[in-house]
Amino acid sequence: MKKELLIGMAAACVALLFVACSGSKESTEQTEEETVQLVKVARVTEQAVPQVVSYTATIEPYKRNLISSSLPNRIKKIYVEVGDHVKAGQKLVDLDRANLAQQKLQLDNLELEYKRVQELFAVGGASQQQVDQMRTQYETAKTSYENLDENTVLVSPTNGVVTARNYDNGDLATGAILTVMQIQPVKVQVNVSESDFNKVKLGMPVDVIVEVYGYEFFKGKVSLIHPTIDASTRTFVTEINIPNADNRIRPGMFARVNIDFGNVNRVVVPDQAVVKRSGSGDRFVYVYKDGKVSFNQVQLGRHMDTSYELISGVENGAEVVIAGQSRLKDGAEVKVVE
Image (tube, rainbow, N blue to C red; front, side, top):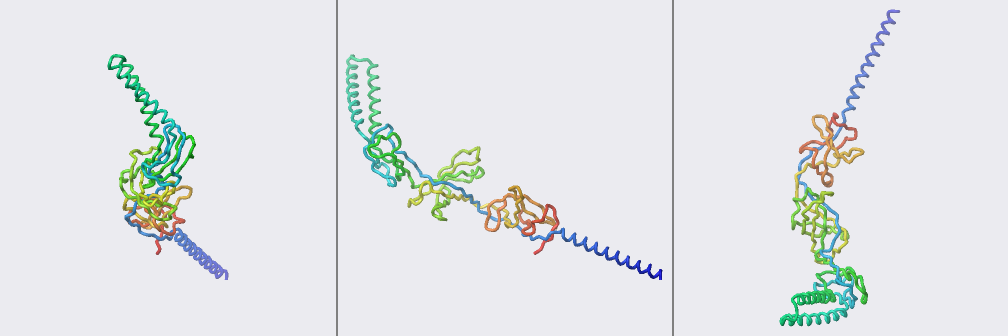
């Protein structure tokens, strides 16, 4: 009886040991399977990507002219109002000519005196010094009279529109009486990156979107490229003219300027592949190869619908993880699923 009991106990121990060992093996296999992450991947390709750079700008007049007299003077009549369109050479303001008549009388008297001194000099009755002094007085008075005469009738130097009127008839004007802006064409100035300095050319076409008109495009051309680089911003100023034949675009309007620098071959990746590292602005992509992934930092270019242009970080033809990245680490083993 004792012998049978001992044999039964030994058999039970062997059975328990077998179950324990089997359970341990199954648990180990399950743990190993859980450490291999399941991911989806996509193969990236190199494509021709348009290099369109967008800038914000404010519409400016092609020219801005302040209409004023070189000397303080009383306004006799202003012929235009704000909003009026004017032509080059058109009379805008008449100023008081009372001082002009007085200066004309002084000029005539100096001219007579100058001629008298010249006659005396011819017969030995005056010195060369007297002649020179009188000539200087006469020429100074003549210049002053001509300036005053020119500044009693103020004309527009350009075709444009009156955008400001600062005085009324009868006021003593000591500054700009009117402002005239040329708005055919108008212009914008944008600060372009130093890296694009050799790409910007005079006359190259530019698309301009004026926000007030929604997504309507206006055609412009590069008209001026500043020859120096701003050392603090690493940019240079580029001026763009827009014809504005219908006067729809007005100074002060907000605009977006799109400059097309042509196409460049770049690796393009699905946007699901791009991972942002917490606490920084760095972007990464997991690249799959031979059952493992590497954590590659990338430099992003344009976002195009559902993909990103990559400036650097992933080679053409590589396979990148597009799903299952949440628990991945650099060098992790993975299993690709459809």
